[in-house]
Image (cartoon, rainbow, N blue to C red; front, side, top):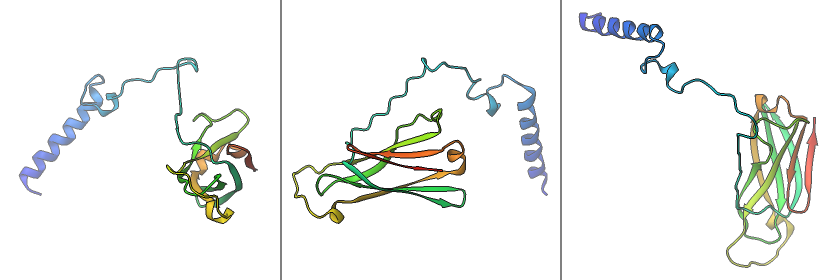
Length: 155
């Protein structure tokens, strides 16, 4: 090891050790965000805005176990062809619900122009979402809602 490398390494180690000594220093990365503060539910305003309308009907819902979690797969049926950008949108707050129900809505963008109504298979939209074991720890029921119905699976 060269003398230059030794000096630089010594300076870095000394500087990092100093961060733990100086509690209020801006150099200490543990102080960058400040301390946490408790908030009541009335103080926290969470508003989910998704302008996409609900898909008319949920036709299938399945949960497939994977290593480290599960895949939620939902199939919806819009009223006519041409719907796109389908997604499962979480409706349950991040803290979860008291009864262990996780609720999603199936939303998609309708076509700009009026299109014909065709066969059921040509209109189906299938979407999937992966959840980790940690996200599923307290979940007992998973429900996906559409405009006219909802489907759910239980553990």
